[in-house]
Image (cartoon, rainbow, N blue to C red; front, top):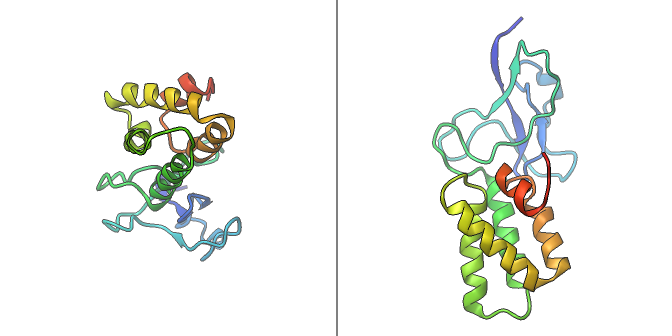
Amino acid sequence: MKEGYDIAQICLNGHVINSFSSGMPEFNKKYCDQCGEFTIIECQECKNPIRGDYWGSMSMTTMTAPKFCLNCGKPFEWTIRKLNAAKELAALSEGFTGDEIIEFQKSIDNLVINSPNIEVAKVKYIKFVKKAGTSIAQGLKDILVDIVSETIKKTIWNDPK
């Protein structure tokens, strides 16, 4: 039996196709069956393989798409797409000045990075969604839930995961 990490195959929208693409290639797909998007097995920036699940583990957990490349640190395409969608949705909010929307959009990137700026981003997020209303708040949550830090999930959405 193999030991170590396999290579993951993930579509550009972040759907994990095969977390053992090298060891179990019979499950690979050129296009995603959930959204039709092209699939990749390596970082589009540095060409390093995307780390898949660990061989030898008795756990059969479902892999989640990583947010950033472990080799170059750049965000994967699905992370970029979700951040851009959240920023676009924020721009549709009524009752905000252009400067307020731009300020909030700038803080969205910090919601996915576990850094000291996350506390500021968290406060800005809470203030923004209170004023933006439930449909914008729910839309932002739906877009960002897979890429925000665990701290954000626990504190602003009361998500125990």
